[in-house]
Image (cartoon, rainbow, N blue to C red; front, side):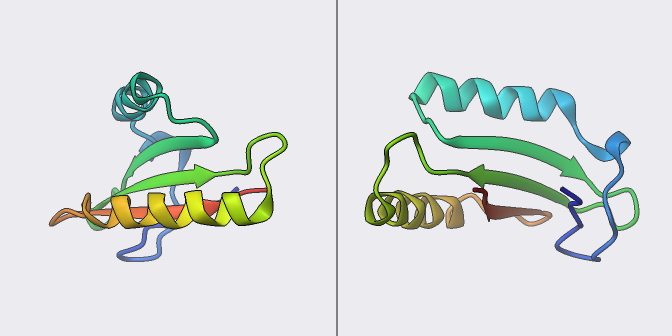
Length: 94
């Protein structure tokens, strides 16, 4: 999946993936027991902004309405994480 900067729309390169930040976010996710989500942190070399992509997918056997509720709750929580130069982007995956 091609990811683009939400600020300047530049396509991210593999070098712009911040592996350390992504690992830290993933460690926090696991510690919180969150399942069905994946965090990836990218820093844009063109504009200096960062995007945290949160991929969410249905859990095995999860009903559509339960998935929608979980997605809506996660989206509400993510809005609180927005920073001055950081955008959190929720991506729904099959």
